[in-house]
Image (cartoon, rainbow, N blue to C red):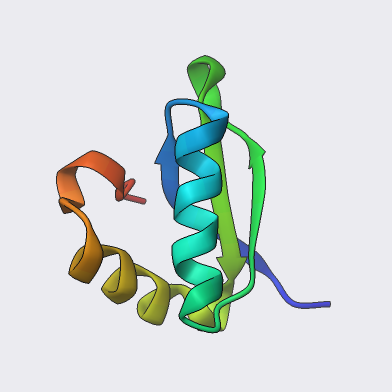
Length: 69
């Protein structure tokens, strides 16, 4: 089984689904999970983490979406 890691945190379901759609459009499988303080996490396979971060940074304001480990 592939290890999943958190690549982003979203404030609500709509934002999480948007991030998930961006990643899937780039060919990266992403799953949603629950985070702290009612946020949602976006998880990807550990080997996809770098590509996922680069994809999100290219299409968004990184400070808005990217959660630092």
